[in-house]
Image (cartoon, rainbow, N blue to C red; front, side, top):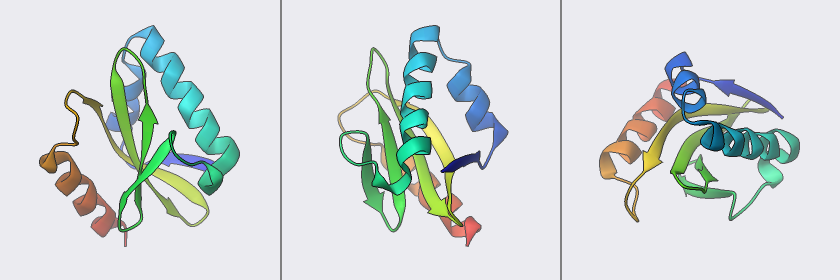
Length: 102
């Protein structure tokens, strides 16, 4: 499956992190690319309304939000998770991006 970034700033954020995090991000994106929508928990989790999170677990817990569109995985947003729950502002932002894609 092809992976596309909606914004280059998300790409640069992810690949500007430390080497260990970038290695884990590459591994997770590789799984998404190889298995597409066949990838499941614990690697991905549905957030709702067609939005999924790619879960990068490590020293830093990184969440990469994406949707499936036209046979591609479109990366909408990413952030470093610092609490047990995803902050509402992150969820709201991702849902607003998805609405702009339609």
